[in-house]
Image 1: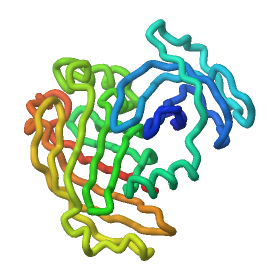
Image 2 (image 1 turned 135 degrees about the horizontal axis):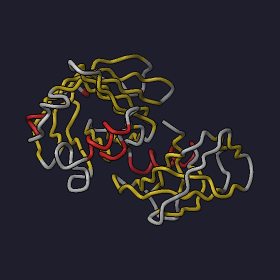
Image 3 (image 1 turned 180 degrees about the vertical axis):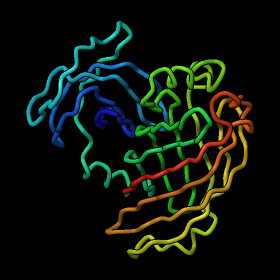
Length: 249
């Protein structure tokens, strides 16, 4: 899946999410330059994929190499990885718990083969009132099978060029029973609207929120029928098991 790093910018509330082709170790505060393909903008996050490390000031060590060359449509970004201190300052000002450390996985078992993909470039927020948001770019889902990934994004299935992102906006209905100041694991139920493939439908999902040292960890598992979103899954997958995890601070 590659390494995902987050770079801070001079634009308040905006970061750059870069999925690197190579595995690297980057220390907070290092100044680096990356080059990659721009895939979209969601909830204050600019997302790049197929990124390559161009330059590094210090504390950045590539561990693998790639012979692939960036395409002419690549975007170059120079910035610094966002630090924990920056995230905490944002939390105080906005009174939101924000997450760039999360993933959405889907799985479906078909007669031909198992289908699964993971998106590690998701963005989420939980407000102090229990409002919750998720956003993900469709092209951010990665498959082991390249042919399956191509089909997933084509017009006959998700049509990601026309419908580039999916969003969920809702609230945690039992938020009053979750004590964000006390360590523990709490059951959570979220209700809201999921937009996918240009269609918005109400959805309810259950899961848990674990509180530890002021940080939140959300876990949820639910089923999704693609037909409800005008997607023909007859030759791919009609029902998906969706697993969501996100770490907030």
